Length: 206
Image 1 (spheres, rainbow, N blue to C red):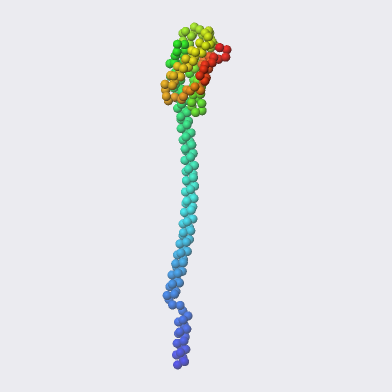
Image 2 (image 1 turned 135 degrees about the vertical axis):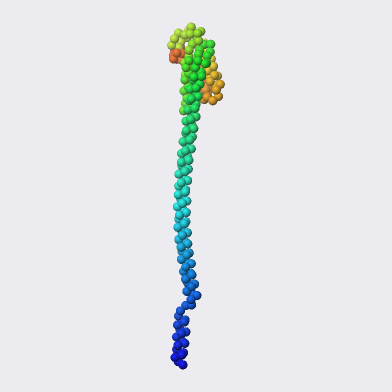
């Protein structure tokens, strides 16, 4: 009888020391879930770092593209400015040929005309070399000097400049010939005088 009780007590003691199978399964599932969560966190951190690197690279590319765009815009503006300036210079050359031998008064004929453009291509100054009409040739003494009064010479020179300016202004595409544009007159390359600010002044010694 005592042996039977001892055997029963042994079985009871043995069965109490081992956890039930369901507890082992729960622990395993918890461990697996923890591992999955850890892997998920690691993957999320790696993905986040990769995303940050991609965003940083994209920002750098955008900055580089912006810089290149600004550079191209500046170059384009410079190119447009140069083209506009060259166009104005070409128009001035075209007008030079148009005015030569075409602008005449009773006293003078434009033999040569030279336009000087400023940095923006606008007319800054003009030099006109004249040929005498027959009546003026009779009173021409050479070296840009005439035997008629200075007042008469100035009036005839002013008339020639006015006629040339009107002819020039008939083409609306050319750079402006303004009242600030100085005009130097020569006769056979000898100084005659200069027109500036609305009045003509004979060269010194005339």
